[in-house]
Image (cartoon, rainbow over all chains, first blue to last red):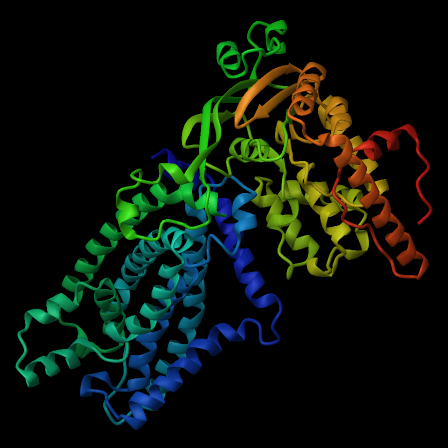
Amino acid sequence: MARTRAIWVNRRILRILIVRDLKVRYSDSVLGFAWTLLDPLLLTLVYWFVFGVIVARGEANEQPYILWLLTGILPFQWTAHVLGDSGRLLGNDAKLVTSSSLPREIWVLRSVSSRFIEFLFTLPITVVFVLFFVIFPPSSGPVGVTWWLLILPLAFAVQFLFNVGLALTLSPLCMLYPDVHRIVRVFTTLYRYLSPVIYGLGALTLVLEENGWPEWLLWVYSLNPLVGILNTYHAVLFPDNTSDVLALLAISAFLSVLGFVIGWRLFRRLEPRVLKEL
Amino acid sequence: MTASIGDASGRAATPDTSTETPAPPVAIEAHQLGIKFRRNRIRNRRLSDLIRQEKGRAKSEFWALRNVSFQITQGESVGIIGANGQGKSTLLKLVAGTLIPDEGWVRLVGGVAPLVNISGGFKADLTVRDNLHIVGGLHGMLRDEVEERFDDIIGFAEVGDFVDTPFRHLSSGMKTRVAFSLITSLDEPTVIIDETLSVGDRSFKRKAYERLDTMLAGGKTLFLVSHSERQLQRLCTRGIYLRRGRVQADGDIGEVLQQYNLDREMEGHPGWKGERKKARRERRQRRREAERLAAAGVAPAGSADSLDFDDEGEDLPDGAAPRPA
């Protein structure tokens, strides 16, 4: 509790750090802020070309496929960036970390928060594409925003908690065991395909039916907290994708809270040893 | 407190706190402080070690500090004395809160202005102005306070023309001057100084000294780690002598230094006389190099030689003529 208060007292410093992160990220490159938009946009276009055009996948309820990708990739990038940061968020700024006695959780919150703001900055891409499809309706049917838009803040909150839990767990482990950092890097790539980013739960259900696999596999799959979270994002633009949104998000929320509690305890336990390594 | 110091040293000088007012306000208090480090660089690789934390690793660990207790009252200036590797810097980090002890605790009343690693928080890509706001903020300054003191900080650091220059374009001397100027502008009641601190060229060193003197006169508590006898005697009234991670002596700076020197001689160390000679020789070389550069038309703009407050710092305020640059 005292720790929570210490973090709260230092929230102003947290804000300064986030602003600093954003300033540093855009201060030096010519395109500056444009990179925030270009990065995920290019990534999405590559995925769209490979999986939308060449493989030509995409169920009827995942059309227009570029929107499906955007609603999956943009939030996934938030978690992917946090995973990428977690290996060095204590080590990279070791001088900064060791020059102040701030509660060390601040550095975790800083990474997750500044990545969150970056994610928010990328949302206009989706808005532009939605507007485009509203003005020029695609052959697959009209595009519109569903009421699930209102639940979006909840999805943000759950994903924030999930990301904080991940970073709290992984950042000290990466400092103490360099192997973990490598594992995380490989896992991030795998994770993109293990989560419903380029395909949806609907497509997965079809695969299960075609191969005659038991349906409980889908629930095992849902134990990945990102399933419920990404499913909610998809539901905002894809009304056919709305089955079990709340149930899945509830599972994600529960697992995220669990991960957060475990992560924080681990972080507190490893903190003295991490500081000795810095 | 007295008892614990007696335990640790066996022959400690009387702590001067006893001669002061009955209940002096405490600035720093350490109680049975202990921290251990791993001797080898190989970290425990197996995950099972993570679960069973304390088993089977005792042999590779050593206590860098143990049973360290002391109490520093507000306004005191305390020098930490000891040979290399006896736990001085570790103690400093524990006091500053950048290390967490494995045993005991340390308590600070109010914040600290840490003159340790001072340019650590500065980001190379941002301008001096942005950096001052951010680092000042990190150390607890409000935005208005930074604004208010901005001109003073810049003026003291002598970087008026570089306010909107990216930090990495400053010379290393300028960088340390800006950092020193900012940290010493903090309103914290306790100042912590590491001997490795570097603050730029000779004339700036003199200013730095003057500022430290003003801060001390203003009632700030000083916690200083140093090898330099002169500097310790000049700035400190009390010394804490660390040896093998324990408090060997705690008391009047002169007496503690005497004991330290005695120990060094008895242990057959080359002694710091030799080290100081070597340091002086190196410094002379560096100065010549800087002068040569200056003569060649390259602006040295303050070499970042460490504030080895040695003789130099001592002589300067007495009016040693500044060298023509």
